[in-house]
Image 1 (cartoon, rainbow, N blue to C red):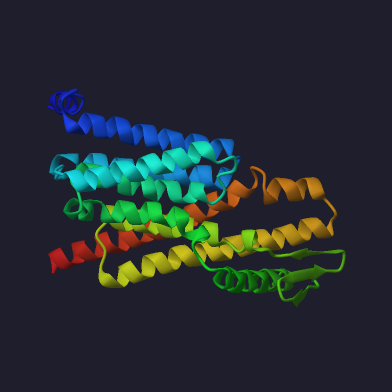
Image 2: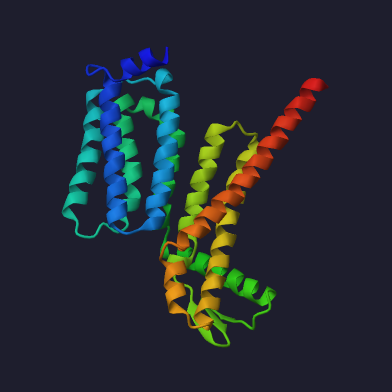
Length: 286
């Protein structure tokens, strides 16, 4: 049965085959560009989100309505073509890399199912959109988040026994200081966690209270873990170990904090699923 379904998908005259080829090519292009841009956080986040979105689309492929018109197909191809052309012509992609997943997903959705069929991919498009959130927020919003990050980092240092002074976004220790810039505000990690929250809600049915709680917990975990990372940076600078600072700030060590955030959020989701299943069993018994 599985073999016949797979054969149906890979038929050259079947639209699903060409959508699969186009989608796979776009994913590879974006991941390759992210890798060449030497942005490990974006690369790891994009890989995770692309893999999850691809899985969800594959799971519901038999129930998708693949009917599009000339106008939405033309618009979808235009979006993808413009994005590819801009990617090839730019020497430094910068923030445009964050927008590519959503543009690719929107364009492919229009080609596959037209305007009315886009609602089939609402959750997946929202997930891809969260990759782009860090570059869309206004500067004042980033600055306020940066202030909050500096405050929480200073509190963590004070609570753990360090003599710390906070002045705006500057955190002072007796032997050194750091300035918390917008890149350390935590918005990227928070966006990543919110995207994971959307994926979790796509996988498991939630009550309306849980739909509020899950994103709130995800964002809080990302914010707290990033503040802990900033506090660690301050300690390393105070010890005048710049090699360690580079490793934990922009090197592979920075990925560890994303892993910690994902694990903590995963534990919360596991606890939430367990409580939901336990509640369902109790309701059936009663």
